[in-house]
Image (tube, rainbow, N blue to C red):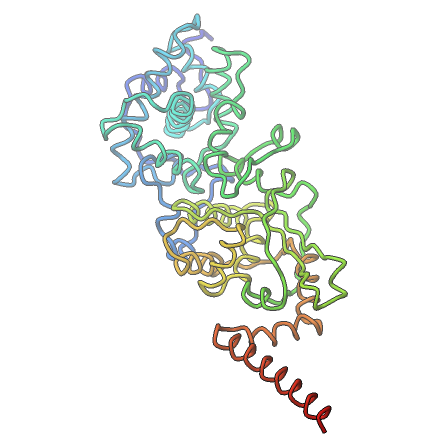
Length: 423
């Protein structure tokens, strides 16, 4: 069989390459989809439609026909054209030869092949050089964060191995020392980090298989010391205000090994309840900004759909227990374990409280820490301290009344002593 007649299943390689080179519009996608690409159930989508819907670019089959995204299809083809005719020009291969190798690594359905190759080429070319002004929609600098955001949505993915295959056919030949993850994917991870500090992954996590870009981002938050075992233990909820009244402080904790690690630290001085010493719950610093809701919601849906750690769901369970009212947000912000850029404490509280609606939490990753918190909170001295604070230190007038009462008591006692001595 001659090279020009090479076929994969019922796909004619040469015909598909020519279609890609002509930038034909992608038609209805095939129903054949990788098992790692999930649709968001309507019960969750209805809670926050904007969190799951791409705004600029469709990746993969699920949003291919969305009217507001169709205009960007030609822009993706332009990126692919530039990749093969300009970026990869130093290679001793024609665009047709490179495309043929890409197509041969893809699926056996012609429409799916065109879609996967086009999308993979666009992602790689965009991440390699996002500032090129190809867009007919306006300066690409304005669209850059929106396009990156679209790349982490759960319904807007292509399998990671497709990216890897196309990368090997293109950039790896241009730069043999180049790494798909280190040079192209890590910037996405850094951009969408919801915590302060860098996200660090060990070599085993990096070299393991990934479902897609969102799946890779999720691995950045997984606990390397925990398996997928379930823990259905019920825990009692205590808000920040309640814990603060009982003597618990909140401090930030930056853990390079697991970014969502929490630790309740006790002091030896706790045996002296009037010493002023308080237990400290050390937490990661969560950053609430415009994209945080979408990032967390997509990670949670991915955890519910795939067989992966439910660490993000578990973390949001803690935040939901801690935050009931805006005052809880204000206290966490003052303690520097929460950065709120949403405009108001009420808006942040509502966001946290709505995040796990309709989501079942079957595996709680912080049972040890929360058992200690609950045990401390229900003990005698913390309750006594909380009662004294509520009764005497809840507002300035109560404090003034207490001070005046103490002064009057002291003066009365002194007067009584002098009266006894005079008698």
